[in-house]
Amino acid sequence: MTSPHPPATPDEHDELELRLGPIAHGGHTVARTGEGRVVFVRHGLPGELVRVRLTEAGPEARFWRGDVVAVLEADPGRRDRHVWAPADALLTWRRGEPPVGGAEFGHAELPAQRRLKAAVVAEQLSRLAGLETAVEVEAMPGEDPLGLGWRTRAHFAVDAAGRIGMHPHRGAAVVPVESFPLVVPAIDDLRLAALDLRGAARVDVAAPAGGGTPLVHLALAAGADRQRLRRELDRLAAGREVSVTARAEDSRELETWSGRPAVVEHAGAHRWEVSAEGFWQIHRSAPGLLLEAVPSAAGARPGEHALDLYAGAGLFTAALADAVGPAGSVLAVEGSPVTSADARRTFADRPQVRVERGSVDKVAARLWPGTAGPRGRRSPGRARAAARPDVVVLDPPRAGAGRVVVDQLVALAPRRIAYLACDPATLARDLGRFRRAGWRVRSVRAFDMYPNTHHVETLAVLEP
Image (cartoon, rainbow, N blue to C red):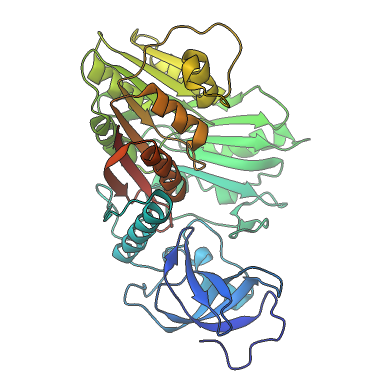
């Protein structure tokens, strides 16, 4: 349904009355105007009748985008109140301002959010992988009833006045924020919004899930006044223990202004030191859950050889090393110089663990030249011998593993692969390639590791 008198040449800021259709990957519902124009709408639920403010439109555009600004007929899964006012499109557009990102599903009850995520995962698997399977999105252990207080990492932009902020969806503006209810209390307790951070382009904050010293890292803009910023950051240390690091945009040198340049994380019986710019699972319960679920899915046995790709600081490396024991081996591959150095320090006293730094496809082509294929990338230099893996764990970034890496894994022919993904579309594309190569998807699990957002974590197990 459209408004009775839609504009002849729609543009941004026009409003339409629409009946929202199904959920789509990326946090949108799909609606159509009376003329059949597709509109990707955020902040709504399937079936609702709403008013939509167009945020990207034009007569030549293939589709339009918009935000819900009024709900005429609500879905029962809609909350009475959004969990975070700056992300509530109904409130912010009344002031003529777009909502910030970071809690785009905050208008929906958690069970409704999980149903939407399950629908997206199932649709992507069906469309891109040809895999028809029912998916249930599992709640994380000990989840807050509103899905708050779970992020142990947060990333903030800094506006011209030195205030921390976040961006609207697909927007470059910085909207100042006073707090962020999705983070663990230790991050909000730092009160970063009270600081003048002019000279910082970005602020990254980490706080260990089990308690311990939080860390604030500044990405410094060119010409930043370090002395003034250091004095400002000294205010954080008043009455609390906190570490502060910084790095200039044109420098490889990490500066430690206070405390230590890493966060100490624990899961199970293991301990990691994760650098300020290193990768770690952000949900407070994720390391513990995944430390058990992912290696268990891989099924490594004593004496076997395991391959941990996109290994980060080595969360799964630790569990795989326990599983294969001293007679087996684990090869961990990580592209980030910072994070791979973290992993090397962690596993320095475990001789069966070897950490390789580099892109996964290039490391694989170097260690197993026969997997590169006619168009694969080959790295120069002599390869240090590596046993072919019996099991593989991979946790690639949002872009997925991709054609080259999937083909390399098919050529390596492990007996099982456990694939953890934060993006269901790229996972489905990769699974489709595995299936066309003769592999079968043994199981798929999904975890609600990002409550109040559209993101979902998925674990697939493959066998040849």
